[in-house]
Image (tube, rainbow, N blue to C red; front, side, top):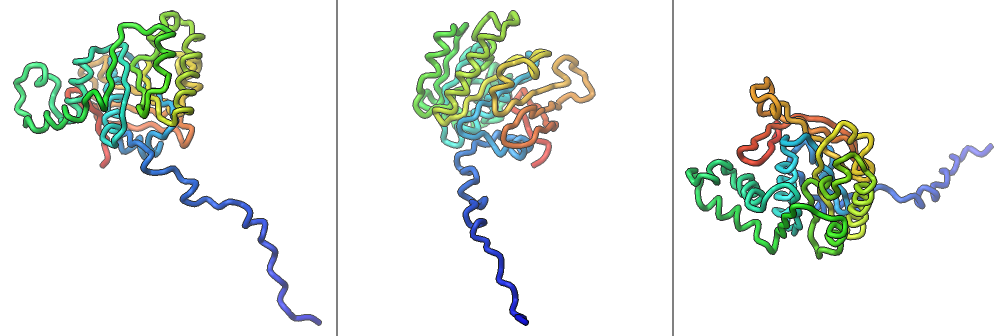
Length: 268
């Protein structure tokens, strides 16, 4: 009788299966923080080649939220090409300065603030034309849009109010926006750079918008005190990650400080 132990099973097939290791993990240096702890925890940050959409009702703060993402990207050394279809260049730059230096918009308008000039100078120095290519357009025809998605060097492309590109979409026709949405995604994938856009929310956005279909991350912003100034949740905003290709969906509450052009996490 052979009392020897049985030979171990052949595990050679296991060696042929790649293990999850650091080579499969995203490069942390390639991820851009959203600059909101809860959002970074859910998504990991903005990834190369992603199409990120921020949507909200008019006046809730979607442009301010997008600018906060762009300020974070610039701090990380990225270059940005921003197209605004809704706000003037002075207004955009004021929001950037206000958010970065934590200077109120009112003091920038009136010049009566007591913020240190060094803070303003440092914030201003962050956004020269070589870093932030800012383009303001009263309207954007489809052909102009196609030119935007030609190679922009190493710049992140950001468009404020992408749904204003084609007037037919405002009237309810989403066919043109579908083509625009696919073009944005194609640009992001082929360039390897993120594209960040804002869009006005409407009741069929989550079920019908081509942006919802093509985006990698969709962030819906709700601000309870946008319509009711003395709302019991004044100063709060709800952020809903309603689509996230690389992780879970989630909802969480943050503080809004729109007088400082920023949103803040409730947790450190």
